[in-house]
Amino acid sequence: MDRTLQCDCGFTARAEDEDALVAEIQRHAYEAHGMTLSHGDALMLAFRAELEAIALPTTRPATPEDMEER
Image (cartoon, rainbow, N blue to C red):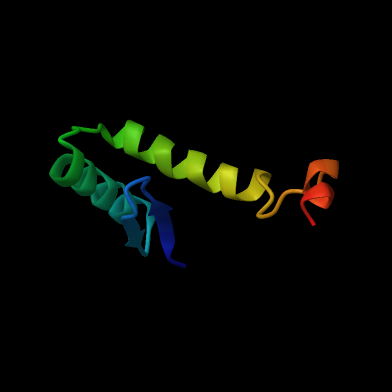
């Protein structure tokens, strides 16, 4: 199964396994942002993104203010 991580700059890292995803994240961080990430830091970014994708709804509930705009 492909693993992915979307960078704030718009880049998407894709790989078939965890180690390859970490390597892709490290490469992008260095080449695009001048950052050197350890294996652990890159892995933490990937896991955090996965958790956020699960925990955050893709849409937010309507608020009373939204209804006023209509």
